[in-house]
Length: 260
Image 1 (cartoon, rainbow, N blue to C red):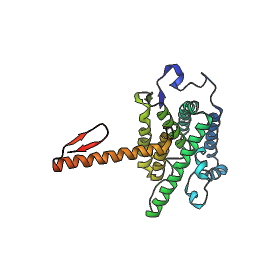
Image 2: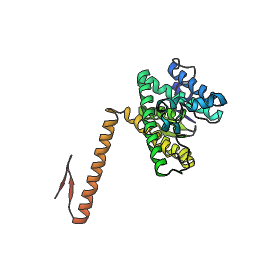
Image 3: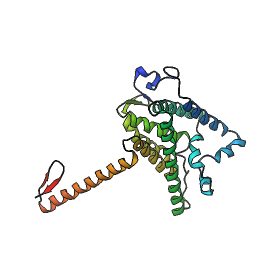
């Protein structure tokens, strides 16, 4: 269980169920859709219909709409955990919706979910091509409320990096660390037991794209900065190696390195 430590924002620090402005209607509709699709999975007549919209191997038969419909079809879980997931989605989603507005919120959710599914499908195709008998549960890490939680928690962690979150009501953690914790949880709870490499990679893409989209300049600038940092580290490693092997003395200037 997770909540922000901010007593002035009401229950859980994200604004309670009744305090402050009314909850965003978009978010309530989203939760309602997830609850409805979760409930319909318990009936034989509707379970097969939902499979047409949830991301699964049917994507390779031409069901391309699954790339954008899958976040809105709840993934099966126990009733208690599903309700807990909806509550967490509400807490984080409300904060992100308030910060980004309707257009920004949906642009982020749809673009991150679409990129995650496209990459996951590509990884799954490569995996089953290379190893046809690979036993795994494809896309389970990424389905329904899980990808939505991944996106809104990553967005909250990016927008409120210095906020303090109590993990499981006990451990105080800076919000920015949830970017890495999401990947760790996906690896431990889904990749290791279910061997869902496609869903795990898709989750990593969702976290990265959410983080990068909320940075100045967007994903392209973030990738460019990372590339420059990597090149700088490689250059420094080469200079250090030259200094050790040949006895060169490397003097750091303000911006450039000089070799004497």
